[in-house]
Image (cartoon, rainbow, N blue to C red):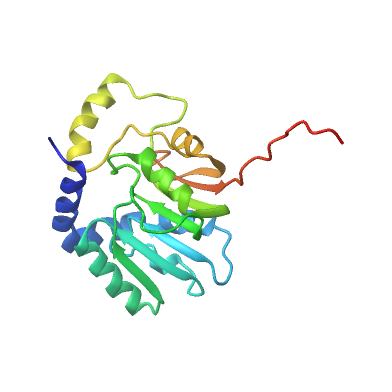
Length: 216
């Protein structure tokens, strides 16, 4: 059986030496716009999921408690080197985004840039982000998405059979993914290539208060 997780680890190990040449300049503006939407304050616990080589780091404040995870050891090594050079106090680990090694409600902010379109099970990845966020915690997402109100046609689905193996899924929809996990979307705006790449800021709403119908 084809193991997508193992394939992703292998291909990103191969991409790692040249990843910055491809993904740095192309996504600078989109990364900055996505992270500018976050409500930052001192001492926040922040997790970067699918952290890659650390291309988000230059747009993060220094006064945070920074954690990062990536499936690929070569990417983690490059993230550590960049975070050290930029003066961050951080913890970076090899980690599967679908099985985060953190307790419930641990983070104030979770960042997921350019990862939802490559995960084997994005629904599980979003559920994990929801789990590790504190109530009212913020989720910052930036990726390529199919419009929420326009399901993929047969041509796009056929092409996706190729692109999902060598690069990325082109049929995923952000709104259903986030709302299905329990997030409330506060911002959703195009940031690159028309509306293909979108940045979303969502919040983990606290559990609804149940009305028991008790008499006054």
